[in-house]
Image (cartoon, rainbow, N blue to C red; front, side, top):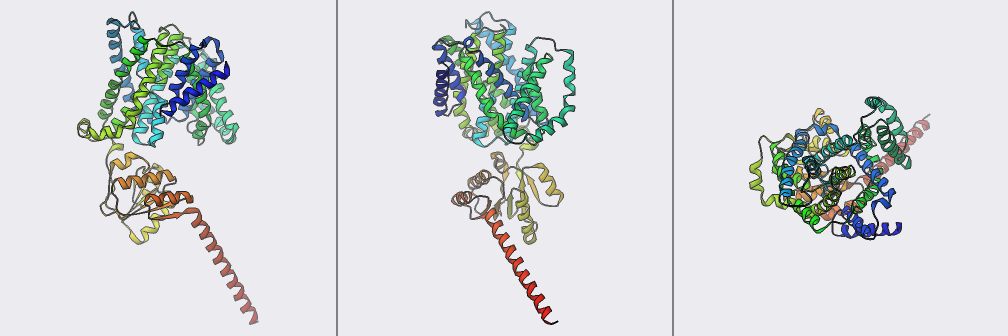
Length: 540
Protein backbone atom coordinates (compact mmCIF):
# COMPACT_ATOMS: atom_id res chain seq x y z
CA UNK A 1 0.00 0.00 0.00
CA UNK A 2 3.00 2.36 0.35
CA UNK A 3 2.93 3.41 -3.36
CA UNK A 4 -0.84 4.01 -3.09
CA UNK A 5 -0.30 6.29 -0.08
CA UNK A 6 2.15 8.45 -2.03
CA UNK A 7 0.02 8.52 -5.18
CA UNK A 8 -3.20 9.44 -3.34
CA UNK A 9 -1.43 12.12 -1.31
CA UNK A 10 0.17 13.63 -4.41
CA UNK A 11 -3.11 13.56 -6.36
CA UNK A 12 -5.07 15.25 -3.57
CA UNK A 13 -2.36 17.88 -3.03
CA UNK A 14 -2.18 18.72 -6.74
CA UNK A 15 -5.97 18.88 -7.08
CA UNK A 16 -6.30 21.34 -4.21
CA UNK A 17 -3.30 23.40 -5.33
CA UNK A 18 -4.86 23.83 -8.78
CA UNK A 19 -7.65 25.84 -7.15
CA UNK A 20 -5.11 28.17 -5.50
CA UNK A 21 -5.49 26.60 -2.05
CA UNK A 22 -2.70 25.40 0.27
CA UNK A 23 -1.81 21.76 -0.52
CA UNK A 24 -2.17 20.84 3.17
CA UNK A 25 -5.95 20.78 2.64
CA UNK A 26 -5.31 18.06 0.05
CA UNK A 27 -3.13 16.14 2.52
CA UNK A 28 -5.90 16.21 5.12
CA UNK A 29 -8.32 14.96 2.44
CA UNK A 30 -5.81 12.25 1.46
CA UNK A 31 -5.84 11.04 5.07
CA UNK A 32 -9.62 10.69 4.96
CA UNK A 33 -9.41 8.85 1.61
CA UNK A 34 -6.78 6.45 2.99
CA UNK A 35 -8.98 5.83 6.01
CA UNK A 36 -11.76 4.78 3.62
CA UNK A 37 -9.35 2.15 2.24
CA UNK A 38 -8.95 0.71 5.74
CA UNK A 39 -5.64 2.37 6.64
CA UNK A 40 -5.40 3.93 10.09
CA UNK A 41 -2.62 5.60 12.07
CA UNK A 42 -1.75 2.46 14.07
CA UNK A 43 -0.84 0.58 10.88
CA UNK A 44 1.75 3.20 9.89
CA UNK A 45 4.05 3.83 12.89
CA UNK A 46 6.70 5.41 10.65
CA UNK A 47 4.20 8.07 9.60
CA UNK A 48 3.83 9.27 13.19
CA UNK A 49 7.61 9.52 13.59
CA UNK A 50 7.88 11.57 10.41
CA UNK A 51 5.03 13.79 11.64
CA UNK A 52 6.93 14.48 14.86
CA UNK A 53 10.05 15.33 12.85
CA UNK A 54 8.01 17.77 10.78
CA UNK A 55 6.76 19.62 13.87
CA UNK A 56 10.29 19.71 15.33
CA UNK A 57 11.81 21.14 12.14
CA UNK A 58 8.94 23.64 11.85
CA UNK A 59 9.83 25.07 15.27
CA UNK A 60 13.57 25.00 14.52
CA UNK A 61 13.06 27.03 11.32
CA UNK A 62 10.78 29.46 13.16
CA UNK A 63 13.61 29.97 15.64
CA UNK A 64 16.11 30.56 12.81
CA UNK A 65 13.96 33.38 11.44
CA UNK A 66 13.15 34.94 14.78
CA UNK A 67 14.29 38.45 15.60
CA UNK A 68 13.69 38.45 19.35
CA UNK A 69 13.64 42.25 19.45
CA UNK A 70 10.60 42.36 17.16
CA UNK A 71 8.60 40.36 19.69
CA UNK A 72 8.89 43.10 22.32
CA UNK A 73 6.98 45.65 20.26
CA UNK A 74 3.65 46.50 21.87
CA UNK A 75 1.55 45.61 18.83
CA UNK A 76 3.16 42.14 18.72
CA UNK A 77 3.72 41.16 22.35
CA UNK A 78 0.67 42.82 23.89
CA UNK A 79 -1.44 42.35 20.75
CA UNK A 80 -0.92 38.57 20.61
CA UNK A 81 -1.33 38.14 24.38
CA UNK A 82 -4.51 40.23 24.58
CA UNK A 83 -5.96 38.49 21.53
CA UNK A 84 -5.31 35.09 23.08
CA UNK A 85 -7.01 36.05 26.34
CA UNK A 86 -9.94 37.75 24.60
CA UNK A 87 -10.39 34.79 22.23
CA UNK A 88 -10.55 32.35 25.12
CA UNK A 89 -12.99 34.58 27.01
CA UNK A 90 -15.15 34.61 23.88
CA UNK A 91 -14.87 30.95 22.84
CA UNK A 92 -15.32 29.27 26.25
CA UNK A 93 -18.81 30.67 26.98
CA UNK A 94 -19.81 30.30 23.32
CA UNK A 95 -18.85 26.63 23.27
CA UNK A 96 -20.61 26.13 26.60
CA UNK A 97 -23.81 27.69 25.22
CA UNK A 98 -23.65 25.49 22.12
CA UNK A 99 -23.32 22.46 24.39
CA UNK A 100 -26.34 23.54 26.43
CA UNK A 101 -28.28 23.99 23.17
CA UNK A 102 -27.69 20.33 22.41
CA UNK A 103 -24.62 19.99 20.17
CA UNK A 104 -23.52 16.46 21.08
CA UNK A 105 -19.79 17.11 20.56
CA UNK A 106 -19.90 19.81 23.26
CA UNK A 107 -22.41 18.32 25.66
CA UNK A 108 -20.80 17.29 28.91
CA UNK A 109 -17.40 18.84 28.26
CA UNK A 110 -15.78 20.27 31.39
CA UNK A 111 -14.46 23.81 31.69
CA UNK A 112 -10.85 22.63 31.24
CA UNK A 113 -11.77 20.88 28.01
CA UNK A 114 -13.58 23.95 26.72
CA UNK A 115 -10.48 25.98 27.63
CA UNK A 116 -8.30 23.63 25.55
CA UNK A 117 -10.61 23.99 22.56
CA UNK A 118 -10.68 27.77 22.94
CA UNK A 119 -6.87 27.78 23.13
CA UNK A 120 -6.58 25.71 19.93
CA UNK A 121 -9.10 27.91 18.09
CA UNK A 122 -7.28 31.14 19.02
CA UNK A 123 -4.30 30.42 16.71
CA UNK A 124 -3.88 31.58 13.10
CA UNK A 125 -2.08 29.61 10.42
CA UNK A 126 1.63 30.32 9.94
CA UNK A 127 1.78 28.29 6.72
CA UNK A 128 -1.19 30.06 5.13
CA UNK A 129 -0.21 33.60 6.18
CA UNK A 130 3.40 33.28 5.00
CA UNK A 131 2.22 31.85 1.65
CA UNK A 132 -0.12 34.82 1.12
CA UNK A 133 2.58 37.35 2.07
CA UNK A 134 5.12 35.76 -0.26
CA UNK A 135 2.68 35.71 -3.19
CA UNK A 136 1.86 39.39 -2.65
CA UNK A 137 5.52 40.32 -2.13
CA UNK A 138 4.61 41.85 1.24
CA UNK A 139 6.75 39.68 3.52
CA UNK A 140 8.92 42.71 4.46
CA UNK A 141 6.07 45.21 4.71
CA UNK A 142 5.06 46.57 8.10
CA UNK A 143 1.84 44.56 8.12
CA UNK A 144 3.79 41.49 6.96
CA UNK A 145 6.32 41.87 9.78
CA UNK A 146 3.54 42.35 12.34
CA UNK A 147 1.74 39.27 11.00
CA UNK A 148 4.91 37.16 11.33
CA UNK A 149 5.53 38.54 14.84
CA UNK A 150 1.99 37.65 15.98
CA UNK A 151 2.30 34.16 14.50
CA UNK A 152 5.65 33.56 16.22
CA UNK A 153 4.18 34.67 19.55
CA UNK A 154 1.29 32.25 19.02
CA UNK A 155 3.80 29.51 18.19
CA UNK A 156 5.64 30.27 21.44
CA UNK A 157 2.34 29.98 23.36
CA UNK A 158 1.78 26.60 21.69
CA UNK A 159 5.30 25.40 22.52
CA UNK A 160 4.79 26.47 26.14
CA UNK A 161 1.62 24.37 26.22
CA UNK A 162 3.41 21.39 24.64
CA UNK A 163 6.17 21.67 27.24
CA UNK A 164 3.72 21.85 30.15
CA UNK A 165 1.63 19.01 28.69
CA UNK A 166 4.61 16.67 28.92
CA UNK A 167 3.77 16.48 32.60
CA UNK A 168 7.18 15.23 33.76
CA UNK A 169 9.31 17.18 36.21
CA UNK A 170 12.51 18.21 34.42
CA UNK A 171 15.81 16.78 35.60
CA UNK A 172 18.07 18.91 37.75
CA UNK A 173 20.45 18.77 34.78
CA UNK A 174 18.00 20.94 32.85
CA UNK A 175 19.54 23.92 34.64
CA UNK A 176 22.69 23.25 32.63
CA UNK A 177 20.83 24.39 29.51
CA UNK A 178 21.14 27.94 30.83
CA UNK A 179 24.81 27.75 29.84
CA UNK A 180 24.01 26.91 26.19
CA UNK A 181 24.73 30.50 25.04
CA UNK A 182 28.33 29.98 26.20
CA UNK A 183 28.70 27.34 23.49
CA UNK A 184 27.57 29.82 20.85
CA UNK A 185 31.10 30.78 19.62
CA UNK A 186 31.99 27.10 19.08
CA UNK A 187 28.69 26.34 17.31
CA UNK A 188 29.16 29.42 15.09
CA UNK A 189 32.69 28.31 14.12
CA UNK A 190 31.30 24.93 13.03
CA UNK A 191 28.49 26.76 11.22
CA UNK A 192 31.11 28.79 9.32
CA UNK A 193 32.94 25.66 8.15
CA UNK A 194 30.08 23.45 6.93
CA UNK A 195 29.89 25.22 3.59
CA UNK A 196 26.75 25.51 1.49
CA UNK A 197 25.91 21.96 0.38
CA UNK A 198 24.83 18.74 2.03
CA UNK A 199 27.04 19.44 5.07
CA UNK A 200 24.89 22.50 5.80
CA UNK A 201 21.74 20.33 5.75
CA UNK A 202 23.36 17.73 8.02
CA UNK A 203 24.49 20.47 10.38
CA UNK A 204 20.92 21.78 10.58
CA UNK A 205 19.50 18.33 11.29
CA UNK A 206 22.07 17.73 14.02
CA UNK A 207 21.32 21.11 15.61
CA UNK A 208 17.53 20.61 15.48
CA UNK A 209 17.24 16.92 16.30
CA UNK A 210 20.31 16.20 18.46
CA UNK A 211 21.45 19.37 20.22
CA UNK A 212 17.90 20.72 20.31
CA UNK A 213 15.23 18.02 20.57
CA UNK A 214 17.51 15.21 21.82
CA UNK A 215 19.29 17.19 24.53
CA UNK A 216 16.11 18.78 25.87
CA UNK A 217 14.32 15.42 25.97
CA UNK A 218 17.29 13.92 27.80
CA UNK A 219 16.83 16.38 30.68
CA UNK A 220 13.06 15.99 30.80
CA UNK A 221 11.95 18.93 28.65
CA UNK A 222 9.79 18.92 25.51
CA UNK A 223 11.91 18.19 22.41
CA UNK A 224 10.05 20.80 20.34
CA UNK A 225 11.07 23.51 22.81
CA UNK A 226 14.70 22.49 22.36
CA UNK A 227 14.45 22.82 18.58
CA UNK A 228 12.98 26.32 18.92
CA UNK A 229 15.65 27.44 21.42
CA UNK A 230 18.55 26.17 19.29
CA UNK A 231 17.00 27.84 16.25
CA UNK A 232 16.91 31.16 18.14
CA UNK A 233 20.54 30.61 19.20
CA UNK A 234 21.57 30.28 15.53
CA UNK A 235 19.35 33.11 14.27
CA UNK A 236 22.12 35.71 14.55
CA UNK A 237 24.46 33.89 12.17
CA UNK A 238 24.87 35.24 8.64
CA UNK A 239 23.94 31.82 7.18
CA UNK A 240 20.80 31.28 9.29
CA UNK A 241 18.52 32.27 6.39
CA UNK A 242 20.38 29.91 4.05
CA UNK A 243 20.05 27.09 6.58
CA UNK A 244 16.32 27.71 6.90
CA UNK A 245 15.94 27.50 3.11
CA UNK A 246 18.02 24.30 2.92
CA UNK A 247 15.75 22.58 5.48
CA UNK A 248 12.51 24.00 4.09
CA UNK A 249 11.57 21.02 1.91
CA UNK A 250 12.50 18.51 4.62
CA UNK A 251 10.12 20.32 6.95
CA UNK A 252 7.38 20.52 4.30
CA UNK A 253 7.72 16.81 3.45
CA UNK A 254 7.58 15.67 7.08
CA UNK A 255 4.59 17.94 7.76
CA UNK A 256 2.74 16.09 4.99
CA UNK A 257 2.94 13.06 7.29
CA UNK A 258 1.47 15.14 10.14
CA UNK A 259 -1.57 16.20 8.10
CA UNK A 260 -2.04 12.65 6.84
CA UNK A 261 -2.16 11.35 10.42
CA UNK A 262 -5.01 13.78 11.17
CA UNK A 263 -7.13 12.34 8.38
CA UNK A 264 -6.24 8.78 9.37
CA UNK A 265 -8.02 9.29 12.71
CA UNK A 266 -11.41 8.83 11.02
CA UNK A 267 -14.03 10.41 8.82
CA UNK A 268 -16.11 13.40 9.92
CA UNK A 269 -19.82 12.85 10.43
CA UNK A 270 -22.42 15.27 9.07
CA UNK A 271 -22.76 16.77 12.53
CA UNK A 272 -18.95 17.19 12.72
CA UNK A 273 -18.97 19.07 9.40
CA UNK A 274 -21.89 21.19 10.61
CA UNK A 275 -20.01 22.14 13.79
CA UNK A 276 -16.88 22.91 11.74
CA UNK A 277 -18.96 25.22 9.53
CA UNK A 278 -20.29 26.94 12.63
CA UNK A 279 -16.73 27.48 13.87
CA UNK A 280 -15.79 29.04 10.53
CA UNK A 281 -18.69 31.49 10.87
CA UNK A 282 -17.01 32.72 14.07
CA UNK A 283 -13.73 33.64 12.28
CA UNK A 284 -14.91 37.23 11.56
CA UNK A 285 -14.99 37.76 15.35
CA UNK A 286 -11.27 36.88 15.45
CA UNK A 287 -10.64 39.33 12.61
CA UNK A 288 -12.64 42.11 14.29
CA UNK A 289 -10.76 41.59 17.54
CA UNK A 290 -7.39 41.84 15.78
CA UNK A 291 -8.60 44.97 13.96
CA UNK A 292 -9.56 46.67 17.22
CA UNK A 293 -6.26 45.77 18.91
CA UNK A 294 -4.07 46.94 16.00
CA UNK A 295 -5.84 50.30 15.72
CA UNK A 296 -5.62 50.59 19.52
CA UNK A 297 -1.84 50.34 19.13
CA UNK A 298 -2.02 53.27 16.66
CA UNK A 299 -1.47 51.41 13.41
CA UNK A 300 -3.09 52.83 10.29
CA UNK A 301 -6.46 51.33 9.45
CA UNK A 302 -5.03 49.85 6.23
CA UNK A 303 -2.22 48.10 8.10
CA UNK A 304 -4.70 46.84 10.70
CA UNK A 305 -7.13 45.53 8.06
CA UNK A 306 -4.51 43.70 5.96
CA UNK A 307 -2.92 42.13 9.06
CA UNK A 308 -6.26 41.10 10.56
CA UNK A 309 -7.54 39.49 7.34
CA UNK A 310 -4.24 37.62 6.93
CA UNK A 311 -4.70 36.19 10.45
CA UNK A 312 -8.36 35.33 9.84
CA UNK A 313 -8.21 31.52 9.82
CA UNK A 314 -7.53 28.54 12.05
CA UNK A 315 -4.08 27.04 12.49
CA UNK A 316 -2.05 23.90 12.03
CA UNK A 317 -0.70 24.64 15.52
CA UNK A 318 -4.27 24.33 16.77
CA UNK A 319 -4.22 20.81 15.32
CA UNK A 320 -0.90 20.11 17.06
CA UNK A 321 -2.38 21.25 20.39
CA UNK A 322 -5.48 19.13 19.76
CA UNK A 323 -3.32 16.12 18.81
CA UNK A 324 -1.51 16.29 22.15
CA UNK A 325 -4.78 16.81 24.04
CA UNK A 326 -6.49 13.82 22.38
CA UNK A 327 -3.44 11.56 22.81
CA UNK A 328 -3.53 12.25 26.55
CA UNK A 329 -7.29 11.75 26.77
CA UNK A 330 -8.02 15.38 27.58
CA UNK A 331 -10.31 15.74 24.56
CA UNK A 332 -12.49 13.22 22.67
CA UNK A 333 -10.65 11.96 19.52
CA UNK A 334 -13.40 13.29 17.22
CA UNK A 335 -12.23 16.86 17.97
CA UNK A 336 -9.09 16.25 15.89
CA UNK A 337 -11.32 15.62 12.89
CA UNK A 338 -13.64 18.58 13.63
CA UNK A 339 -10.70 20.99 13.92
CA UNK A 340 -9.11 19.58 10.74
CA UNK A 341 -12.32 20.23 8.81
CA UNK A 342 -12.67 23.72 10.37
CA UNK A 343 -9.04 24.49 9.39
CA UNK A 344 -9.66 23.44 5.78
CA UNK A 345 -12.92 25.39 5.51
CA UNK A 346 -11.31 28.50 7.04
CA UNK A 347 -8.64 28.39 4.30
CA UNK A 348 -11.34 28.09 1.63
CA UNK A 349 -12.93 31.29 2.96
CA UNK A 350 -9.63 33.10 3.64
CA UNK A 351 -8.25 32.76 0.08
CA UNK A 352 -10.76 35.08 -1.65
CA UNK A 353 -10.82 37.51 1.29
CA UNK A 354 -7.02 37.91 1.22
CA UNK A 355 -7.10 38.37 -2.55
CA UNK A 356 -9.68 41.15 -2.14
CA UNK A 357 -8.23 42.71 1.04
CA UNK A 358 -7.07 45.92 -0.67
CA UNK A 359 -10.39 46.36 -2.47
CA UNK A 360 -12.28 45.77 0.77
CA UNK A 361 -10.19 48.39 2.53
CA UNK A 362 -10.73 50.95 -0.23
CA UNK A 363 -14.48 50.32 -0.18
CA UNK A 364 -14.79 50.94 3.57
CA UNK A 365 -11.79 53.28 3.95
CA UNK A 366 -13.71 56.29 5.31
CA UNK A 367 -15.35 54.19 8.04
CA UNK A 368 -12.20 52.29 8.93
CA UNK A 369 -10.12 55.46 9.27
CA UNK A 370 -12.43 56.53 12.11
CA UNK A 371 -10.90 53.70 14.17
CA UNK A 372 -7.40 55.20 13.93
CA UNK A 373 -5.75 56.69 17.01
CA UNK A 374 -3.38 59.61 16.68
CA UNK A 375 -0.49 60.19 16.69
CA UNK A 376 -0.03 57.17 14.47
CA UNK A 377 2.57 54.47 15.08
CA UNK A 378 6.08 55.84 14.24
CA UNK A 379 6.57 53.18 11.54
CA UNK A 380 3.15 53.78 10.04
CA UNK A 381 3.06 57.53 9.52
CA UNK A 382 2.95 59.25 6.11
CA UNK A 383 6.36 59.61 4.45
CA UNK A 384 7.15 63.24 3.58
CA UNK A 385 9.97 63.51 1.05
CA UNK A 386 9.86 67.27 0.53
CA UNK A 387 10.21 68.55 -3.03
CA UNK A 388 13.29 67.00 -4.70
CA UNK A 389 13.90 66.99 -8.47
CA UNK A 390 15.74 63.63 -8.38
CA UNK A 391 14.76 60.50 -6.42
CA UNK A 392 17.12 57.52 -6.06
CA UNK A 393 15.53 54.25 -4.93
CA UNK A 394 18.26 52.10 -3.37
CA UNK A 395 21.32 53.66 -1.79
CA UNK A 396 23.85 50.87 -2.10
CA UNK A 397 27.21 51.47 -3.80
CA UNK A 398 25.64 52.26 -7.16
CA UNK A 399 22.86 54.43 -5.77
CA UNK A 400 25.21 56.39 -3.53
CA UNK A 401 27.66 56.83 -6.44
CA UNK A 402 24.84 58.22 -8.57
CA UNK A 403 23.80 60.47 -5.68
CA UNK A 404 27.30 61.95 -5.37
CA UNK A 405 27.58 62.48 -9.14
CA UNK A 406 24.24 64.31 -9.22
CA UNK A 407 25.20 66.36 -6.18
CA UNK A 408 28.11 67.90 -8.08
CA UNK A 409 25.57 69.46 -10.47
CA UNK A 410 22.26 69.62 -8.56
CA UNK A 411 23.22 69.92 -4.92
CA UNK A 412 20.21 70.10 -2.58
CA UNK A 413 17.75 68.71 -5.13
CA UNK A 414 18.32 64.98 -4.61
CA UNK A 415 16.74 62.47 -2.22
CA UNK A 416 17.77 58.87 -1.60
CA UNK A 417 15.48 56.09 -0.33
CA UNK A 418 16.99 53.10 1.50
CA UNK A 419 15.37 50.37 3.64
CA UNK A 420 18.43 49.24 5.62
CA UNK A 421 18.74 51.27 8.80
CA UNK A 422 22.54 50.93 8.96
CA UNK A 423 22.87 52.40 5.46
CA UNK A 424 20.46 55.21 6.31
CA UNK A 425 22.55 56.07 9.37
CA UNK A 426 25.78 55.91 7.33
CA UNK A 427 24.52 58.22 4.57
CA UNK A 428 22.95 60.69 6.97
CA UNK A 429 26.23 60.86 8.89
CA UNK A 430 27.96 61.60 5.55
CA UNK A 431 25.57 64.51 4.96
CA UNK A 432 23.43 62.90 2.26
CA UNK A 433 19.69 63.62 2.12
CA UNK A 434 18.13 60.20 2.68
CA UNK A 435 14.85 58.79 4.01
CA UNK A 436 14.23 55.29 5.30
CA UNK A 437 11.75 53.36 3.19
CA UNK A 438 11.36 50.15 1.22
CA UNK A 439 10.31 50.86 -2.37
CA UNK A 440 9.55 47.15 -2.89
CA UNK A 441 6.87 47.39 -0.19
CA UNK A 442 3.28 48.44 -0.93
CA UNK A 443 3.14 50.21 2.45
CA UNK A 444 5.87 52.63 1.34
CA UNK A 445 3.87 53.78 -1.68
CA UNK A 446 0.63 53.97 0.29
CA UNK A 447 2.27 56.32 2.81
CA UNK A 448 4.32 58.33 0.31
CA UNK A 449 3.48 61.97 -0.38
CA UNK A 450 4.81 62.46 -3.92
CA UNK A 451 6.94 65.53 -4.72
CA UNK A 452 5.19 67.85 -7.21
CA UNK A 453 8.39 68.84 -9.09
CA UNK A 454 9.98 65.40 -9.36
CA UNK A 455 11.75 65.07 -12.73
CA UNK A 456 13.73 61.83 -12.54
CA UNK A 457 13.48 58.58 -10.56
CA UNK A 458 16.58 56.38 -10.64
CA UNK A 459 15.92 52.70 -9.84
CA UNK A 460 19.08 51.40 -8.18
CA UNK A 461 17.72 48.53 -6.09
CA UNK A 462 19.68 45.25 -6.29
CA UNK A 463 16.72 43.07 -7.34
CA UNK A 464 14.84 43.35 -10.63
CA UNK A 465 11.51 42.45 -8.98
CA UNK A 466 11.82 45.45 -6.66
CA UNK A 467 12.59 47.82 -9.54
CA UNK A 468 9.70 46.43 -11.59
CA UNK A 469 7.34 46.84 -8.65
CA UNK A 470 8.47 50.45 -8.16
CA UNK A 471 7.69 51.21 -11.83
CA UNK A 472 4.17 49.82 -11.40
CA UNK A 473 3.58 51.90 -8.27
CA UNK A 474 4.86 55.09 -9.91
CA UNK A 475 2.43 54.52 -12.78
CA UNK A 476 -0.38 54.04 -10.27
CA UNK A 477 0.54 57.39 -8.71
CA UNK A 478 0.43 59.00 -12.19
CA UNK A 479 4.10 59.96 -12.17
CA UNK A 480 4.90 61.87 -15.41
CA UNK A 481 8.67 62.32 -15.10
CA UNK A 482 11.60 60.32 -16.43
CA UNK A 483 12.55 56.83 -15.25
CA UNK A 484 16.05 55.34 -15.33
CA UNK A 485 17.17 51.96 -14.03
CA UNK A 486 20.30 49.93 -13.35
CA UNK A 487 20.11 46.22 -14.22
CA UNK A 488 22.38 43.20 -14.16
CA UNK A 489 20.86 41.13 -16.96
CA UNK A 490 19.78 41.99 -20.51
CA UNK A 491 16.36 40.33 -20.09
CA UNK A 492 15.69 42.61 -17.10
CA UNK A 493 16.54 45.61 -19.27
CA UNK A 494 13.99 44.53 -21.90
CA UNK A 495 11.33 43.97 -19.24
CA UNK A 496 11.85 47.43 -17.73
CA UNK A 497 11.86 49.15 -21.13
CA UNK A 498 8.58 47.42 -21.96
CA UNK A 499 7.21 48.77 -18.65
CA UNK A 500 8.00 52.35 -19.67
CA UNK A 501 11.49 52.97 -18.24
CA UNK A 502 13.16 55.56 -20.47
CA UNK A 503 16.82 54.58 -20.03
CA UNK A 504 18.41 51.39 -18.74
CA UNK A 505 22.02 51.04 -17.67
CA UNK A 506 23.38 47.47 -17.83
CA UNK A 507 25.83 47.22 -14.97
CA UNK A 508 27.99 44.40 -16.37
CA UNK A 509 28.07 45.68 -19.96
CA UNK A 510 28.98 49.17 -18.78
CA UNK A 511 31.58 47.77 -16.41
CA UNK A 512 33.09 45.74 -19.29
CA UNK A 513 33.10 48.78 -21.57
CA UNK A 514 34.63 50.91 -18.83
CA UNK A 515 37.29 48.27 -18.20
CA UNK A 516 38.22 48.15 -21.91
CA UNK A 517 38.35 51.97 -22.07
CA UNK A 518 40.65 51.93 -19.07
CA UNK A 519 42.93 49.28 -20.65
CA UNK A 520 43.01 51.16 -23.98
CA UNK A 521 43.97 54.36 -22.20
CA UNK A 522 46.69 52.48 -20.34
CA UNK A 523 47.99 51.05 -23.61
CA UNK A 524 48.00 54.49 -25.25
CA UNK A 525 49.77 56.05 -22.32
CA UNK A 526 52.24 53.15 -22.31
CA UNK A 527 53.05 53.62 -26.00
CA UNK A 528 53.34 57.35 -25.54
CA UNK A 529 55.70 56.75 -22.65
CA UNK A 530 57.85 54.44 -24.83
CA UNK A 531 57.87 57.05 -27.62
CA UNK A 532 58.98 59.71 -25.17
CA UNK A 533 61.80 57.46 -23.99
CA UNK A 534 62.84 56.82 -27.60
CA UNK A 535 62.95 60.57 -28.29
CA UNK A 536 65.01 61.14 -25.17
CA UNK A 537 67.51 58.42 -26.03
CA UNK A 538 67.89 59.69 -29.63
CA UNK A 539 69.12 62.97 -28.25
CA UNK A 540 71.95 61.24 -26.43
